[in-house]
Amino acid sequence: MIADFQVWSKNHQAHIETSLETLLPTAKFSPDHLHDAMRYAVLGGGKRIRSLLAFAAGELSMADEERVTIAAVAVELIHAYSLVHDDLPCMDDDVLRRGKPTCHVEYNEAIALLVGDSLQSLAFQLLAEYRLAVTPQVQLEMIKRLAQAAGSRGMAGGQAIDLANIGKTLSLPELEFMHIQKTGALIRSAVMIGACCGNSLNDSQLKNLDHFAKYIGLAFQVVDDVLDTEATSETLGKTAGKDAKNNKPTYVSILGVKQARKLAEKLRHDAYQTLEIFGAAAARLRQVTDFIIQREC
Image (cartoon, rainbow, N blue to C red; front, side, top):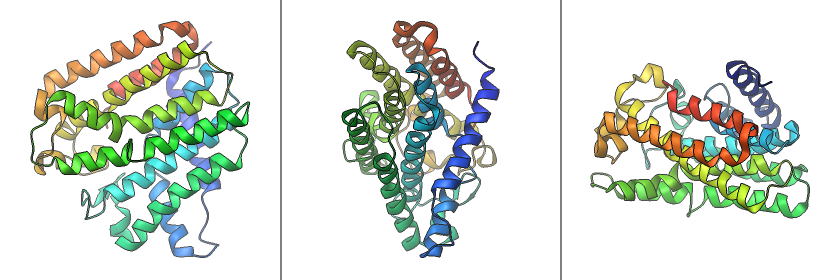
């Protein structure tokens, strides 16, 4: 019987936090200032949604939890690196992240740049260092998926599109294309590499799981845009209303809050449909989906 989701999620959030604390280098080792900044950027904040998706997908494929843990840590490191770089003055120029000063504010811009570089490198070091899959070929595919998700056809590319369109009006398909890369690519990789830690899925199952991850990645961004409009900085742990202030295209600016919420519900429905092939085995993924749609921060 599936345990209460709140208990499950809290346990896994605590587990991933402990794992990050263990696997990140400490300030006992040189360069101590850089290692301290890396830990500052990663630890003590965030909902760890990407990790929860990796663990839920791992349950689907009956993966060993410790294998999924390493994969989830790698994803969290890539995510943290992207936030550190996104907050830099040359990007989004933000001063608040996860309820505390951004990395470049707490340290300086040069250290923040090196923090991002170091977190990205550590993510791939971990994926190569531990045995995470049944075969080396599958593990190489996991590394490839995360690399693609972080690169010019994924997260970095999406950020480039975002920066290029400040002050411009995008169509809904154009906005969706941007966020499939900027936000959705890393979420999709979290799901897929979490599942790859376990038993092999057939082509049809993998296709459906990837479609699920695409829908939930877009839904995450839609909800994020709504919260940026409606929630406070204290609630979000980051500067609220910054997208509107900077005249960035968002789901709310195109659709309005009401229609954006309807779109999030449609994406939840679409995500649920892709999971029907798995039956009860996908229950945890459905719970994480609900958590993403219903969150208030």
